Image (cartoon, rainbow, N blue to C red; front, side, top):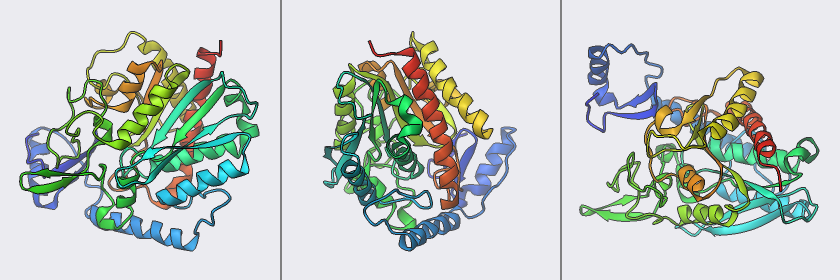
Length: 378
């Protein structure tokens, strides 16, 4: 397909958002290439506004009071998520440890939880999880928060995940972009960070933090144009948010057995490499763990996740955190693309949050158990 880059946005391999000005041209191009299609939403903008206002109404109707669990009836602000993490650390001081791991460009506190079983041992293996790399993927922090809740507040049910492993979870990497996407329906689909860069006499905002890592940076699937959604940054680790994840990976690389970064959308479990179609030598181990997660989800809900390397299943995307973590020493490293939902694929309405985060946890738990089995504490 050779259309103006403003004509459409790729959502996942079978779904596109098309600029209304180019709709007829887009249809013609598909027809000329023998591709059948179905128009699912004639006004994506209206649907985005509806979902946005629905979430805002739920935030006002059920505000977080600074203690207790977060519900699955709304998407929460970064400040509320941090308040929840702080509440958990106060409530479970023997099992939960809050760490400020850095600042965003706009100086928002990036906070992670270290979740243990409270036995005081410091020799355990580690599973590192993050969410919220891309601002518009609100279901990602929601899934990370639900995982935290299961490990902390449903501890007895998940004690087996914490016997010889600690879990470190950073629910929102791109705090500035996430907050910007919550300002209005017009900013809802923002993807990047928010650091400005002068370009051709103007200003473009943000970098794709998942193209900003210093492993095969700019080897493919990224842009040097600061206005592009896949802008890789002026140099590797130009973004403080990417440096925070880098530092967590480096901190835990000797004990870390799985790195899991939560994204949307597409129902995919992707492993390295993202910069080449070649597979790493240990790809059977990666495939085995990912398949455990995919099988558990299918058995629980019937949804099928596709498993494979990033480049072969989706597209080339060099400079990503999963490749960086794998290269740094994590034997298991995944990007988990949660299901496509909403008109854009990135905006599941609030009534879908509960089922999606619970389904995601089924997969995370299954992969965690498989990792614990494959990499026992020695």
